[in-house]
Image 1 (tube, rainbow, N blue to C red):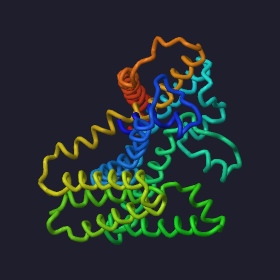
Image 2 (cartoon, rainbow, N blue to C red):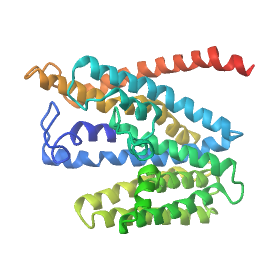
Image 3 (cartoon, helix red, strand yellow):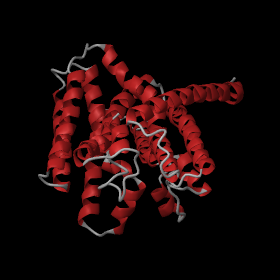
Image 4 (tube, rainbow, N blue to C red):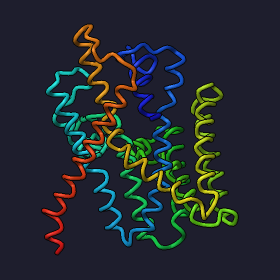
Length: 346
């Protein structure tokens, strides 16, 4: 919801964008409040760290884990990306026009920057929200290896150490002009967000253990929170926005702390995190492009305001469409597995 509000009130209006592309007017107060919606992605990263740690403990090997992640991410993203690309071509919208070559990063979920650095090909995302999936995939690849293949030390300790190491790369990129740091930053954007995943992993560690005795994890969480707050302040010191950013991140940690405080806590709390991913993935994939394509087409009609309504109407339409896409994706995935993969395994 936070990301949806950001994209429907702030992302495509001043000061984020040169002109207001929405069907409604946005004042400064609304734009300022909705501008924090992008932090919803950071919350998803924390939830992902929590849920992925749980998933790792339930899969017997790295192949099972990777297969489960590929099955969850790629079928839905391929269908949604293809649909968005076709709608853009057929509708004649002027919003973020794409070339067929842009399907390469968008279908593979590999960032255009990565393709530019490695292959020298200029591409762009079909829809901008895909950048976070590239970060997610890098996280999956990393944790699969360090959980199943590197047995020495506990998983959460290894990830915490890697987070610290990533900080040195980030500092090197900010403070120096050494090109290798720039390439690392472009190739591995996970470096910029790994601390959010790590926080989720640590909170799950507390959840499954006795929180009163899990002193080490609590110390790591406290250090993680201080690091994130310090990073925000160093980027934009003591402004209203930076203080609000810190407040939102602090709320995230308090909520996770409440959920994780009791080893024998209600299992429904953890189930909610999994349900969030199941219900929101397709919505996340299509919401921005769907809304902005409709907005641009109405603007191109010069005054046709049949669909000029509050974002609530668009949210309802997107939820409906996303549910249909989810059903279709599940059908295609199940059919493909039964038709092509399982017969070979048997």
